[in-house]
Amino acid sequence: GIQVEQSPPDLILQEGANSTLRCNFSDSVNNLQWFHQNPWGQLINLFYIPSGTKQNGRLSATTVATERYSLLYISSSQTTDSGVYFCAVSLQSYNTDKLIFGTGTRLQVFP
Amino acid sequence: GAVVSQHPSWVICKSGTSVKIECRSLDFQATTMFWYRQFPKQSLMLMATSNEGSKATYEQGVEKDKFLINHASLTLSTLTVTSAHPEDSSFYICSAARRTSGQFFGPGTRLTVL
Image (tube, rainbow over the protein chains, first blue to last red):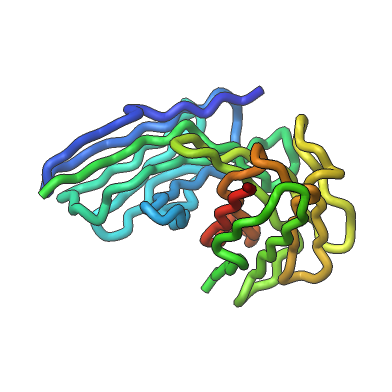
């Protein structure tokens, strides 16, 4: 089956630092989403980005579908950015909207 | 927009009882909803796809008689954990799909079976 791998698995930053999170997937996708799971478990939608580049404030994302990867950039990190970041993909071959989640990146931002 | 609610947010029950979890899309209609399960420090695992007006589609290894799913309307899906046992304790999360916007997730339900 499809593999969705994220790197790094863990990331520790000081407030103000920038970071890049990566998501690699092993098959063609028709949907890719990035989520932030806060300490209470709520999944917050960051980007719906099957291809191209999007920006939202301090966050931006780029998906290169032909090379099967996506990147999430966090600039000027804040302590509230702490949590787990997931990418999730929906396969073209599935013909449904179901998402397969990556392994996640656990981010800790210290003041 | 695209708000999904889930109820209850946490539940503690005795072994052998059944627990029902509700998932509602509050400001949009969702013909498809999804149920996930998450163990501590792990990723989300898709359990089933819930389609309005038809039977749910379960992922391999998920017992359909154990986890009953009903999608009675375009805004409501329910998951019933039947005859719950301690190994069913987990964090259950639902989502609703919105065309060209992807999936939006509820806040989750933490189930503890004693």
